[in-house]
Image (cartoon, rainbow, N blue to C red; front, side, top):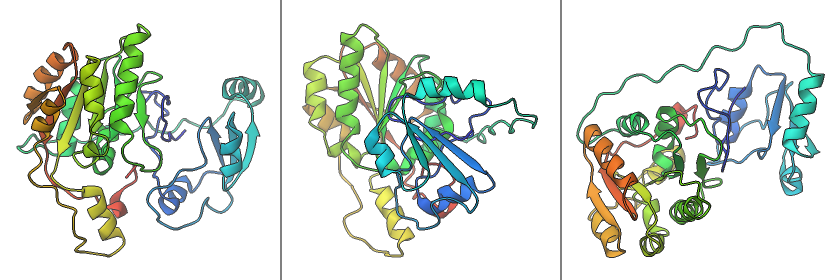
Length: 309
């Protein structure tokens, strides 16, 4: 069983059959599915791609079956056979029809290698620290494209409705979405803590959402990994062999000053221990808190990825 992205729900990532997140590009995704005769997609699109890395849509000899209650998603699916219906009812019926397998289950997903703490933190070190201090019922909203692979590698979510993200790389969704989700958690009485991870480039696409969060006194934590660049676009430039693209560095942006200007509390976090104490305080605050976290300005490389980026 291979997990794919989800906007609101997903397979529990501590399940022994969870194998991680599928790549977002055509070629690498098909390569990861190679060797499987049947792919079953339930309640998700087939497929969203980002960026464009050409290749076969499916490996030769692989059949795709798609279950969705969205006729638009069924119409958009580039391959496979779609069944329009309720996902839960369909899975219940399938469990009665599919015989028990006599083959051993796939090996459990390997734990990521330990990381060393440094200043500035690497993305992996930051999200390993976040995983250690993650609230049990936390909700993650993410829009940090260049750091997404590290985030999904280190932080494993287990409850439904715990993960919200943009579709196909569209920027500007994460910050206002986090505000809306935090408002819904408060007004419905669920009170699950909401943590948004928003890159310092993405942060400014919808930065005015901070004002709404401050005016509504929402208990929202916004973590901003600060690498002072559009790292994902630099990665695109390498992928497309177009070096020297101008305008991709972001020096001189004071995330904390911007946040305070909109009425939010803000602090700079530089070490894992500081993240733990600051996150705990921010989760109990009567209002939004923005954590500016300097990280190492590494550029992700598409050719090395088997995860989301």
